[in-house]
Image (cartoon, rainbow, N blue to C red; front, side, top):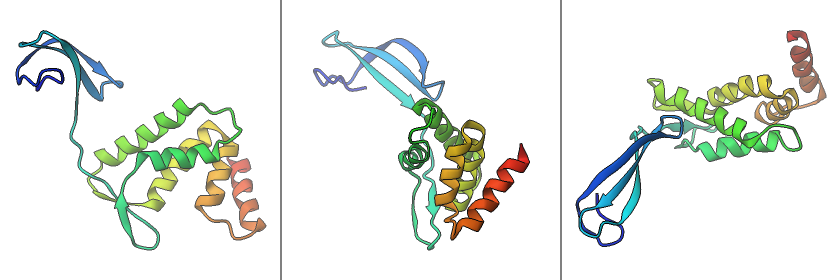
Length: 151
């Protein structure tokens, strides 16, 4: 590992520990030339996920977009950002562990809705209203009725 201070190519690992709930390894290193310490992170190299949109276009999976969509649905609701980040991490992990490299937005949306329903029903209805693009009040009421009968 190249030292960020002097550029020397060799260092020794002083300490290693899991970070981000075991998803990465944090290593404290010391340069063998200048003796300054620095931190590196080791992460698993993941295969890129491609999201197939409704219009057939494709783009790489973006967890930030997923979180932003949930944040909008949870606006003015008592849902912590850490909860939404955890949901996004779970969904990303589930997609990465699957065999498919291409995932439809429909599948991602269903994963989000199933998790939001358990966290906050209002956020679930908000997300569903945008995701399922309710055409009129009747389709909205159908979704609310389904939610109420599941209780």
